[in-house]
Length: 100
Image (cartoon, rainbow, N blue to C red; front, side, top):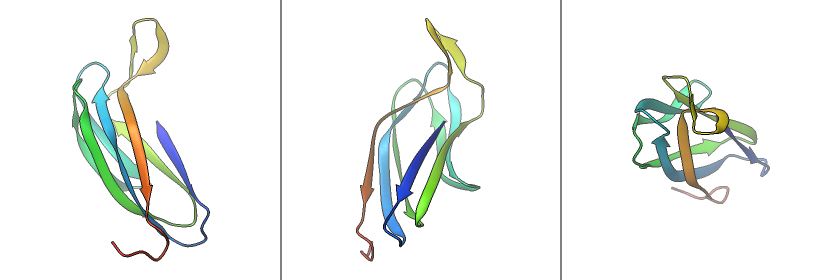
């Protein structure tokens, strides 16, 4: 799964991301990646866990990937293969040029 964030400011901006993550069924290793760089990683279980990380977005599009160590599974009547839940995602943007 992925999250596309677009920075239309023409200059880098600092963002902070927070939310909750959990495994749909059994525990699994989850990593949030931007390209080859890991931004967040932990073992997730069925109980929601805090997801918090920050990064500097260059101008244009940035794709954040949610990568886990096991394939998804069918759950109930949902036709999709499900692995993780990502909920209550908030993205906070610092104005261009703002210090930490």
